[in-house]
Length: 171
Image (cartoon, rainbow, N blue to C red; front, side, top):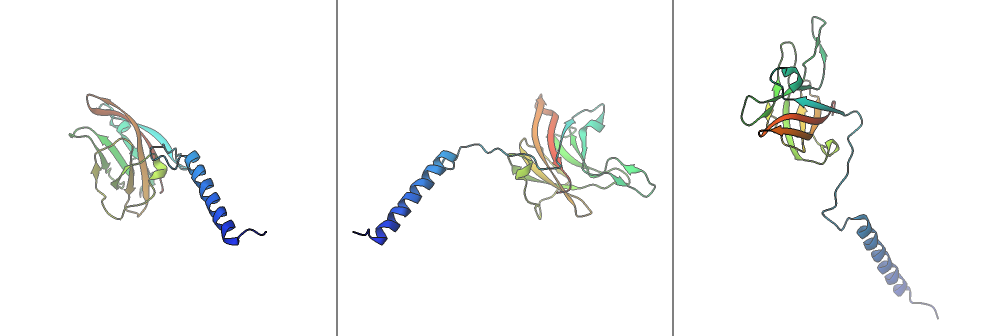
C-alpha cells in the first residue's frame, strides 16, 4: 500500500518545524537575555583619554590631521575634549586656529563600536555628556564622519578621570 502524499508532506513539515525549534533553543535565540559578543571594526583604534588639568593635551582625542596653508600640520584637527570645568562633564568639540572642528551625536547604548551602524541626519551638537557604553557619530565640515564608543572609564568623586574609547575615521 502506498502512503498518502498529503500525509508525507505534513510529516515533513512537522519534522522541519521540530528541528528548527531545537536548533533555535540550542543557539540561544529563544533566550532574550543571551549576551551578544561583537568585535571592533578593522581600522579602529583604542585610546585612553586622561582628564588632566595640568596637561590638557591628554584630554583631547582627534580624528584627523590636516596640512594647513603654511605647510604645518594641524595636530589638533577634528578634535574633542573631555572637559571638566562644567558640571556635568562634557565631551566638547574643540577649535584651534587654522584647524577644523566637528559636531557630535549620541547614538545611545551599544555593545561595541561595530554597533554604531548609521549616521544620523540630525541631532548633532558641539557638546554631549559622556555616557558609558554609548556610541557616538561625529560630523565634520568636509562632510566626513567618524565614530567612537566609550568602552570603560575610571571615576573619582563622581568625575571621569580616565576614559577608554574605541574610535574610527572615516566612517
